[in-house]
Image (cartoon, rainbow, N blue to C red):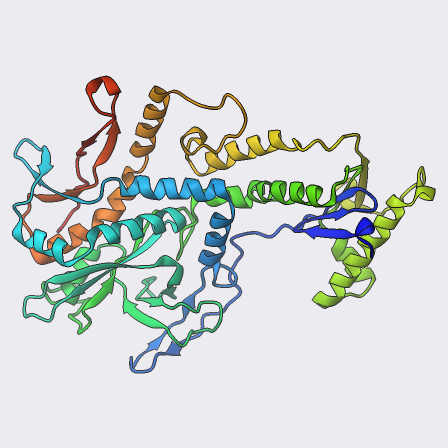
Length: 461
């Protein structure tokens, strides 16, 4: 086929160069489909126990990788995600002391805590965990205790969520183990799989004390174990999810706005490459190809691809030939309740390609995607067009509002430090906080000042 009569398929769209037409071919697919796997018990060499099976994350057990690919493929989402992660990190973890009047101030007099911070990259943990919590609403902090008669936690680090999966719940609804691998989706279970015991999601502090033998479980349900590494289950809760939360920001994907945003640059690139004016917009019903495949008995992916290409070539030829001008294109109807819907709808367009097409659509989708990411578009500069800038006062107030909205995330991120405090017996008045960076006006001599907010006080008993 010549370049003048070519077919360019771009995702759910096809551009018919000869006919000067664009065909919309929607193929909707839910992001969070039900995993098809049946949990399979398995063993890990050297562990001497059978695991109940892996709870898949997504219908192919690679949903974290899918979400990451989508974030990095869109500059608005990527910028908003980085902004939220850095905002959550704030100014890093600060050790504070609570005074008798309830106020907290930075304090460097806790020798054991200072030593722990010196031995561990606590802010490195915080940055990694902040990023995963914003991406996936789930983090996997890991703590390691020593083998002393009175054990203490000596190490804190973060297991990356993209490589983490959970064991299927036991008969009591408890998730016992965390699995770690770089090969999810390739094998089940992967050969490089590592298993680590999970702490109770209800009361991790009590659970680790029982398992380390620091306290006896009054009900006798939890016994001291030989393990010295444990994963703390921490979620930013989303309703109705048993194993893995569903981040609210993924609504921009499932709603279709993400795909629409991705199509704009692809479509404009195709227009530039083909240098043509679009005369027709062809819309296909989502069931069109399924019926076409059935009629032509196409079952394999190769056969379906051939059928789709042949049909598009026929449509391209019909619309591009001068002798077909004014002729009628006949298509079938699709029954939807009491309505009959056309399987193929062809609309004649009257427009001229000037290079500024879809800027209004781009502005709309940029604002909606920023809204879905819960980031004001003016802060990350996602709103294109003229006269979209804001003044310093507006920017400062928006930034303050954004910081106020990450307090719940910081509360989750600091929890492992309070667990370590309870196990290691750190002083009661020791607390941890993540300072905000508070913007001020320039007439006060500086553009920013650091403020210490009240820490998230955790129950340690």
